[in-house]
Length: 416
Image (cartoon, rainbow, N blue to C red; front, top):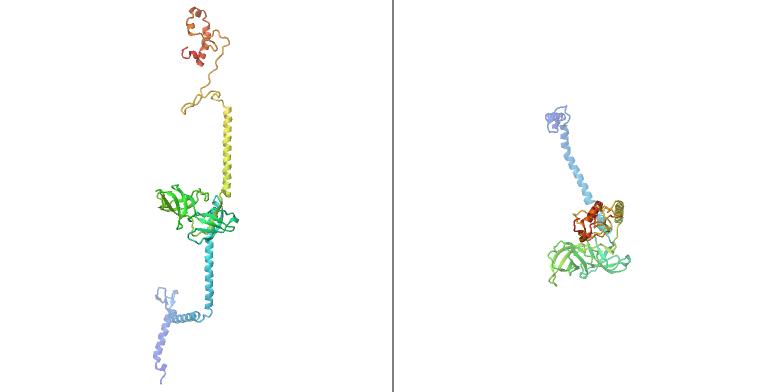
């Protein structure tokens, strides 16, 4: 029997020659990035076909082997080798629970810190002295709106002290114990607070109804009261200081017991259903901060300097008025008021009247002389007047200024 190579020698040689040619071409031909084959030896950027063919032959088996390896590893780790998985799962569950509790605690601490920061800022800005306290319990009854705080008589708490928050009023101290106190909220039926509406300035009494809603009672029907109006404390109850926020008007309803009166339902500004920290007003004496005291001292210094400057100006004006000559006689009587349009300057004083030591002939113009009656002057003979012509020139110059200055009252209406 002939051998296989002897029988198919020609065919094998042909196949060998073709394979050699193909391999030679694969070594010489390069595949460029654009997918075009080239024989240019100067362009080494392409990949040889022999490498491409080798990669195409080797890659599928290699991928299959790698996928089988990954599958076997995953099968071993996830399904076979699970000896400590239960213990690890329990430890992880405990860690998750602990972290959740810590997260809730940190969140509560952060919220409490924000509330305390807001409370501290309000306490520093508030003019009255306050004491911070924490709500520690409630009455446990729907009919009674009271709660307890962790401050008592040992911290200076007394009955009827106002309890507030930065948002608004809460209530007043009802009972005081050594380490705690009972607070009556404003939405209780037995509570009472004097309030005033911000816009209409209508006063009333705030107390709670059966459902625990604050309402203003004792108000006559008024169309000006509208929902959304702010409600403030009036300060007349001697418990809550004036001007603290109470809430806002929700609606107005007629009083079922009195026809001409209405009840104003108020939404409280403070969250009465979830109180945590509150402030108790322990003293109504104004308490000023360091900055406010400094501002007040600066204001007083400026006022003192201004008053001193005004005093110096007045003193200088008085000195100047004493040195300048007066325009009016201080001893002259006040004849009447001067109208705004009238000239207020007084007329200059009259010149002094010359006094005759030895008058030649006294007449009615001579000061201190007794004038003769009109009948005697008319009956005087003309000869007697002609005998003394030299006395007339001397008396005429003196008669004119005397007549202009102060005419005799007896002859005021006669022409000289």
